[in-house]
Length: 335
Image (cartoon, rainbow, N blue to C red; front, side):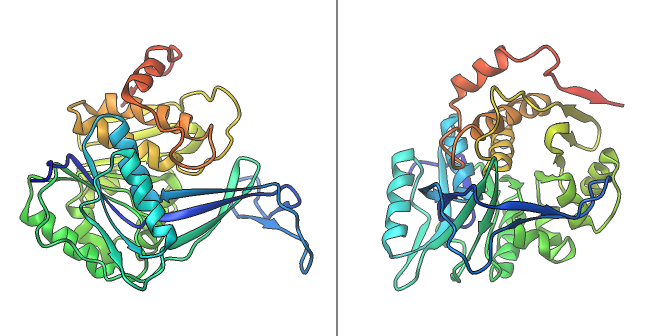
């Protein structure tokens, strides 16, 4: 008899190869209103030296969330797909070492595992991604977890999203957190309407809200209200250095960013750590303001390390940071 899982994370898993570079430049066409984009540039046709290479196994939005929730005290599992190659084997070993249940890890014979290349230039990163094609499906004999946490999946997974939404409708006692990845945001709201409608809590940053809702609206309370109307019971919005915000249909809350003890090393996984920590706080019986105060602390810690998991905190360490937080680090109710 397997142990009941509190938190089942669903999404793709990968190995990240972090490549540190300093022989590059950033070109930008951003105007004073911060519109536009930035590009990292190398000399074309030349050999570019890199500073360091670090391989990190068993990462990705969903694995990061599973590790985060486990370190904070939940029994967690991961529903994901792997190839039967060396990288896949290492991912499974890493998850076991972290205490993550491998009951729902699906290994496919003859398939390759996902492998991403992360170009690090200062604290920012550009990720070269390739999602392998897998036959996404829910296990027939899946035990019902307390929470399901859905994040990044590949471009062939649309029907899997509808399968998950239907499963949640049939088991409405399960709470559901949705942190969309790139492909899910590209689909927009309408194609994933059923997923949004069953969401207990939804996470995205300000720009992602605008993209999903297809709006130029910049007012955060309005964005939260619009998303809440689309289905999620709790809408959560992060806005980088401006902090984070929530709305549950009756109350809006905000909190500032937890101050960095030193300049960030790598921002990979900051969003995953915030979202999974907020969800874990709710799963442990805390209210929304408490969950909002937990999230930024884990994000602060994660960006002090290379990779998305090394800096993830235990509950004891997180509460220590919370106890020593600046006086202005407290949730504020918005009018």
